[in-house]
Image (cartoon, rainbow, N blue to C red; front, side, top):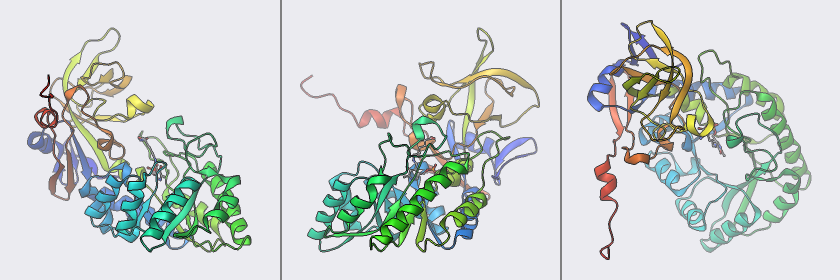
Amino acid sequence: MDHFHLRDGTLWCEDVSLERIAAEVGTPVYVYSAATLRRHARVFREGLAAAGPVHLAYAIKANPNLGVLRVLADEGYGADVVSAGEMKRALAAGIPTAEVVFSGVGKTEGELATGLDAGIGQFNLELEEEGVVLGALAAARGVRAPAVLRVNPDVDAGTHAKISTGKRENKFGVPIDQAPAMFARLATVPGLEMRGVACHIGSQLADLAPLEAAYARVGELVAELRAAGHAISRVDLGGGLGVPYRREDRLPSPADLGAMVARVTAGWDVELMFEPGRVIAGNAGVLLTRVIWVKPGGTNPYVIVDAAMNDLARPALYDAWHDFEAVRPSGERFVASIAGPVCETGDTFARDREIDAVARGDLAVFRTAGAYGATMASTYNSRSLVPEVLVDGDRYAVVADRVAAEALIAAERVPDWL
Ligand code: LLP
């Protein structure tokens, strides 16, 4: 459920009309609903409550805007970060350092040191050598780094290949069959405090079966590590729960996930952790755009909007579907393709789709754009970096500015030898 709804024939976010935001901020612009973020944060927490007390670290990569992070910090969420930049955002938003989990397959030595100096709560190790380097950095500081070993359970998550992470050939985690020996070696590294294991098999999961298979393997590993004498206090079960991108999509709910987790992890006797991203932020945001032209096409018309692949990359990258709705729907529908102004054919949001009939100057939204939207934006074609707005009740704030060409040009220079 989200808080974008029609009121008097036009689309509102909570108690603010999108027409007003378009008039005052301009388009394209991302619009987030604080009430929806809060609701998703609570529904996820309540769903997982079936599995006992869990530690929730919001995966910042999904939507790292400071305003969004503050809403989730106020909901008691920690943060899963994958770079020093994300760590700085988490801390700037007021998330306690102890609640920050540092994931990522390529943490640099400098980033590991930054995390240690900040005193973050957990490092998710992706390879043995990383643990050795982290241990040395910690020992030099007279501390022990809290760490878990991320394992690759070799499970096909059944999602898009580019966002699958739990197959043996993927770059993530260590092969689960090698984990016991590796864990034993890491447990002897001075400066490391090995607390448990982590796993994350992919994103936009529409089926719980692969997750359940992965968790079951992790459970066997926990038992094996305990039998070998290791104290295992934490298991991080990652993120990945999918969201409905089409109105008719039916996905497992957080409560379904919680029931499965409760069943699979019964008796583990560990602190469970989760790293949800998309399920929290996805349907809490839309990309608001204006129709520049409706261009007669060779087959169907092209709706050319002022948002493009640089603002919302998911259709171009993953052939992802985002529902498209007129802000003031007339009730008329037509079949059209939707594209942005960028000069490549990949800049197409939808092909030959039945959509609300729109005309030049009309406003429309791409739905489910709150996760992996603005954060993946670029300035390709020297387009502005898209701004972001956070609505809360009848208030809204611009929580990220439009960064226009002048600012981008100001960050560049022509060498004086040219
Ligand atoms: N934890 C780890 C270690 C991850 O790699 C990810 C996502 C998450 C948690 C959060 O997963 P979520 O709950 O959001 O599914 N740009 C792609 C998605 C990339 C996901 C990367 N990792 C997209 O737009 O679909």
